[in-house]
Length: 321
Image 1 (cartoon, rainbow, N blue to C red):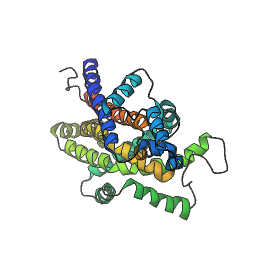
Image 2 (image 1 turned 30 degrees about the vertical axis):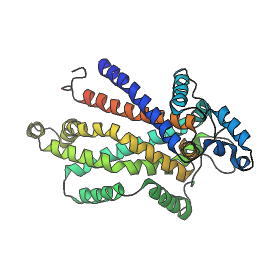
Image 3 (image 1 turned 135 degrees about the vertical axis):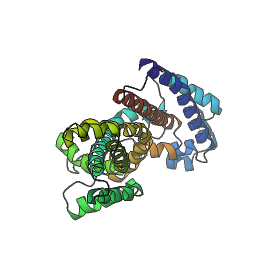
Image 4 (image 1 turned 180 degrees about the vertical axis):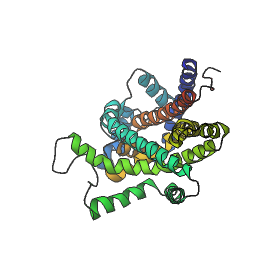
């Protein structure tokens, strides 16, 4: 296990380097001018001399490779530079928002895994039954439903129509104090929407895996020995049927990140979505590169987690083979 994690860590280093260089290359080819974005309306009346001086201060007058290398060497020392659009250190921008994004994504992922596993097991018990047909139909429908559309629908129904849950934000409009109760109530809708948008894949994988496991000889032998249906289902079929689903966890991380950005925007959740959008539209090199590194690292960690979970669930898998 340690050797595999070490190999993945070494592989991640060049990947992250290439990704960050790609961010700077795309930003350099963008038609947006970071100097004018930084200056705002003042840039419309500023002289060319002032704009050139500002360009030198921001470091965007240097060649592409020089800008990337300066950022990379500073980042390795813990200095991600200053955000030109947020007017504060990149580390502070991320620190202020990352916790809320992690809370939303983790809660949604837990919802998707628990609901997907539970419904998948129930549907696999009686393939073709009414529960299987109903849940499968809903799952295939949700696969084609964008996360932002589900968010808008949830706001209309639960916040506007029923008025039982807040429509967005982190706390109530009249409150200037962040409390656990307010955060929990405001988390329900965005976490549920993001979790439901990820649920179909977990449900379908578990359903198919458990259904295949129930038809295997070891499970049939367990039934022949007189074991209860619950023991056969949870102790034998579920463990074997969960193996394909474990590999799905890592592959869903990119979709989870993308969905989280959309859901955060719809529900005005104070995560990194707004910072990501502003960094992209304003060509904020430092902030955009740091956020891209975080997203890439999350994908790599998700893939590593899938392999580790698969190996722990199936002893036949050799970590160091």
